[in-house]
Length: 70
Image (cartoon, rainbow, N blue to C red; front, side, top):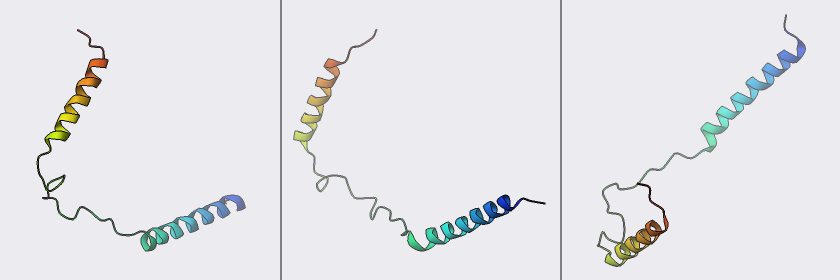
């Protein structure tokens, strides 16, 4: 009923999907999430006024170069 080529193709595709499933389940490591979600970001959670000043300065410079539309 089916041609030889279609039978060979379906066998090839099914063998590849089985081997791909086996490879994915045996080789890939388990995903690792964040260790602690409650820790503050940055250096010990201390305020950094110098960084805030640099960020504000860079933002102002970028904004001054962008045209505004009214």
